[in-house]
Image (tube, rainbow, N blue to C red; front, side, top):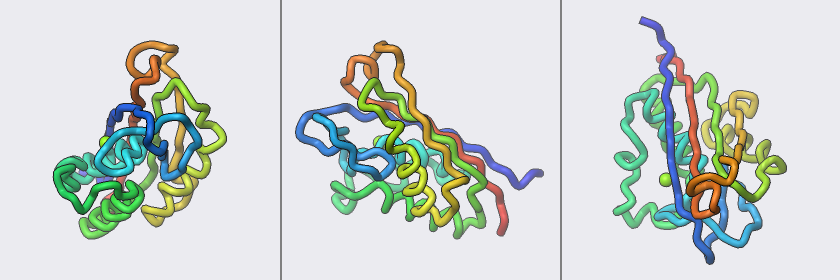
Length: 161
Ligand code: MG
């Protein structure tokens, strides 16, 4: 059996006034932010779910329940670091991650490299192993009307231990 494992993650958060917009660990100036128990970093949540899927850790709802006050307002990069530790414990190394943000606005291009660097740093891997991209959904649906953002991620792991 191959030592490679693929995982996919998907997440959605609602946009609300009075919240900071944190994406890939970068605070982006915007009139609204994502609503959630943690910092609601939808991109990092999708990445964590992809990693959890590939390693059969389940999903982030199981790892970090939103009923646990310990995770209230926490930086999702801290949670990603914990996922990285769990992967290492189980003998997995990250081969690469590809993450896609679905949002009508704001423009994400100026921040993509920093997001990739943040994700890589949290996992102790190289920025070249992480790709962050973004797309609009052409004004359609909940991302198109600005009521929320979504993210997909794919992760490839190799069992090394
Ligand atoms: Mg989430």
